[in-house]
Length: 253
Image (tube, rainbow, N blue to C red; front, side, top):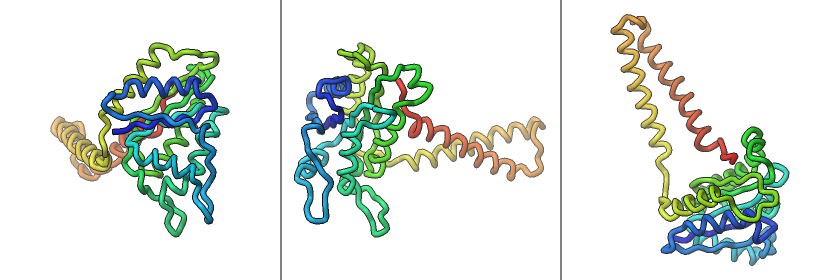
């Protein structure tokens, strides 16, 4: 397995780079690792006449890697320009476009990624206002379109003047790196899990309402209508909460 770090910051030795280095240190030595510094590459969008050779090189590195560490700072509440420019220039290669211009996962489908961002904003302010959320959303939107599976994300706040990573944050990075060493090649069981969840809710609701009927705490008339509507509403609410907690809500510290 190969893990590729993609550094989209202005500084080669800044906080973002240190976060990537710490994650790579946690990766099992049996796996290959590499880091690319996007500032070293003068890439441009492909044109109808020719494909950019620099993007050819970067695309090759993406294809030969199993896990990507996508790391860029948050500036002005959004993803740093170099990483955004990389995504924009690579858009024709990351996905397949149909005749209507809709995007579909292509050659990168079922690879995995870990996202990293950092900012000067204080921990409490970021926790309350979500300054780094948009950066992570941008990464997630691009990767989701490409069919790349998210493993985790790392956020660091209060980075003004930081020369070394705090011990707790370095420990977190090492842990994430260790997780990358055993990441599954494929995860296509999301629908299956939601179906299982629906039947679990249905069985528990039937048992609970049956007990209520037996104790005379629930009217016997219109039982199945009440039961069905309860199961559907409860499942929809529970699934929404789980989806928000798993896919929408981002780390803020």
